[in-house]
Length: 189
Image 1 (cartoon, rainbow, N blue to C red):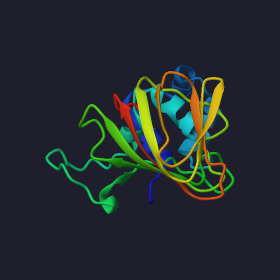
Image 2 (image 1 turned 180 degrees about the vertical axis):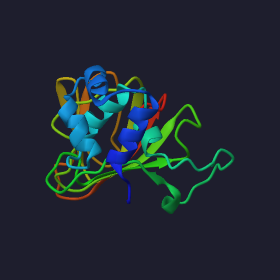
Image 3 (image 1 turned 135 degrees about the vertical axis):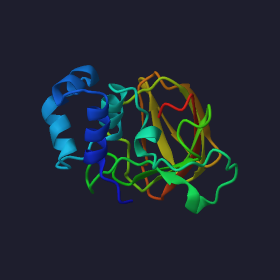
Image 4 (image 1 turned 90 degrees about the vertical axis):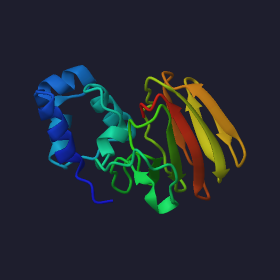
């Protein structure tokens, strides 16, 4: 995916009339972190990017949207799913995780994702949360899901359903790729 996270973040921040320091204050991160991300000198984890975007009331789906008008479309080929994955370099939190969204962000009351996790990939050591409920079914491989203080390993056919306000994270313990089909409502991921 050819996506400039830093430029998109700076544009979103400036559209809202926020300085880096102001955004850092409402998001609960340092202003130097905002600066490094905007300069593309650091790739944020999913949890960190969600915290920053939350400070501007922007979901990951909205952040990664390309602005195309797909409101009338009701069917999608796998190749048409929009990638909304935060950029992560090898060895960083989030590397090996890919989120593909069905449809246009904000166009419906539910967000459907096709998620893949390479062996060892995870959403980062920080648990993250958002204002929604989410559910998913493992299609292949295994995933460790942590919700609050509890961690469970799920395999093909297993599923989860929880309040996304509870801090959570996902990790593929390996050795195979994990594929999950998930939903989030309202679409705040």
